[in-house]
Length: 169
Image (cartoon, rainbow, N blue to C red):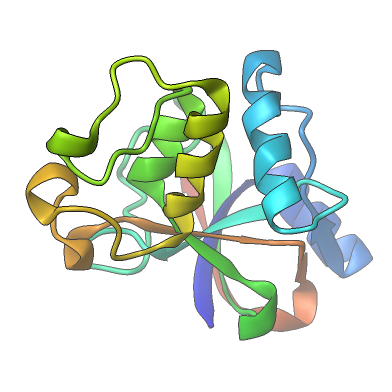
């Protein structure tokens, strides 16, 4: 599966030096770690995953490096294109992941939205993040326009097809 990951230059250098890149949570804010741990449980991962893009938006799969959200302004990064084994990749909806990060209930549509869900109801609803066609398009947007992220346990240097250095805006 063709994917793209945005990494700091140091991560790219580590991948080149060691032949493998593993995820870590050093840059994850403490509050969000509970949600990352939930994701790791769902994927039976012992380590945080490497994050990548499968479909950046409806017009392109490769991330738009003019976007300002990847790294701090002026920071140098690397966009790595790679071909990962399909069985290692878990796809999920970026918009729904952001709902999870906001500790929200993932409702199918406005009619099924809960005003005061229990923690268990919220956690059960989060599994919909992996359903790329989840929900009413009027509520969540058309599935073919969803931003699709990918998580996988590691990135191997031999999977790399190309890379591009860039400076974050």
